[in-house]
Image 1 (spheres, rainbow, N blue to C red):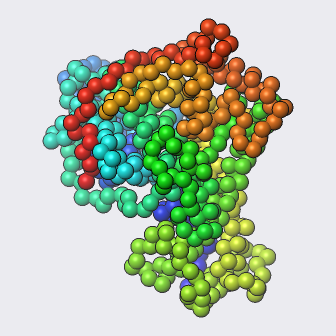
Image 2: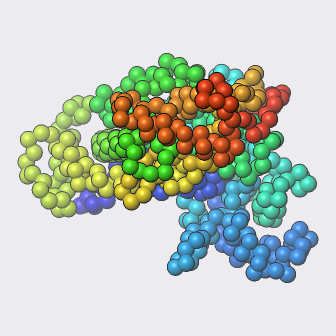
Length: 537
């Protein structure tokens, strides 16, 4: 039987990366994360998958939605525009398609379209990161993040009735979403299989940072509006997906070369967030806060992006290597579930004859689809097979990973760190994401709770550089240049102007010790939630 081209081209390995190289969307990731939180790692199908059926629940409940049916056209437009995720919502040429209700309440996933809400593994990647963080937190007797996040998103939720109660305590948006989903059936009987969480993470530092960021944001739940907080959570989750992919892109080629996951990245020696820079594979980002793309700093930022894209190319090559090696191992024993470490460590020379026969068939089959394939390779068939596939399809898959990174970093959006105009690209920090990051920086943990702290501008710049690799007032390692000093200073001035515009910056003079960030919310510590430290089973 002939091997189809798609089998030759297959590169994806779920053991390496859960999220696929596709364009992802924050609302779709959040809507798919809700059932994972509700059912402890299990997915769940919706109960209503179209707008017309959903609206019938609104029109038929005059007691709850008094007067809505008297203005159907206006109400429908309002709901679609403000409370529904719709494909092609802004398009004048394409018909809009229903995705879901906005993920403002735990049961919002019940009203969604399975096909349109596909998040390409984004929610599974987040679940995996949070699950691994919680495994570590449980040992350290820290609050479990999955439980804290679930508690927040299930505000007013009665698990026995599978409904959200306490209408008088809900904001308008949460009340509206929960009132609609309260009319849908109880779907508590979920016998689906849990997402497998046995696979190790390539980098635990990213999981720790994600968990800590979510915990810091949840400290604002009593002072910040619910919709604003969920928006901030989704921004942070998207950012961390992008950061993790870039970490993985650096780490996997080294793992393939050394044939083990133990590459001494520094993460295994410490689990303290104060030592987060111990990971030698942390990605760096040269931030240029100016509007134009012609400065020397902008050129450094553009080169920074090119380096990241080159790392993605090596990552795809490594994925091909692992995928084809795994295919062979499954050919030997289809019943065994091989771990990533087992795939990396397996010595192909121990099965030399079988390897040569297996990959000779595939190498010969590849000639049907690819030109310029040598008839009798001098090296082994496995090496040449992977090399030819990588040569032919590497650019194709890297283009998809660029889309993943662009969407994770919210390109040309104030919620992200990536800008592009024509062929020019650079890293910068959007106003909305900057607002969220300031919230994260301006609280510190005291005991089991967080409190607002005073923060100087230089302390904040050091914090985002150490935590996320964001270089605003300095040049990324390896690119030090006297030519960039002037544009670096201009960029910092733009940065402080942006801080002033969003209402955080106060300076009495040019001296660093008189430049302060002003907290927008006053967060005060409280007692530890008695259920927050319980482990998920």
